[in-house]
Image 1: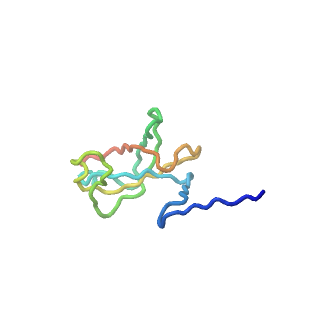
Image 2: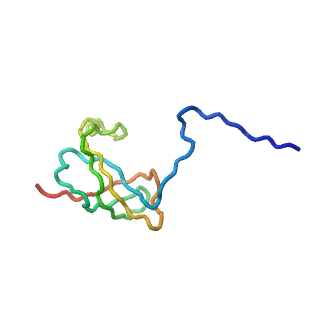
Image 3: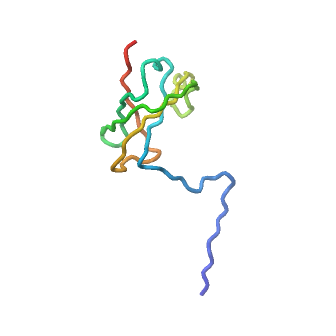
Length: 114
């Protein structure tokens, strides 16, 4: 008996594998332009993961984009999509590796009063 290998063709540019570093995870989201002056680097944030029964994860604001962009089309309403936003990143500790790449989440950042 001979065993032949299975061959599959993959399209050019197709993703074959995605690797994630579960020791260094972050939340990436968008901050409305009107709130830009109310946040700072190192500020604490609470992250809630969809389907995690209200459990909150603490993180710190580690990145704020220097240029505004239009809200991505994945945001549901037209009103939100046409506003300018700044991409932000919040670093999260993940010692138990409970947080995974691509998990849908929301961030709560307390805004400073102006």
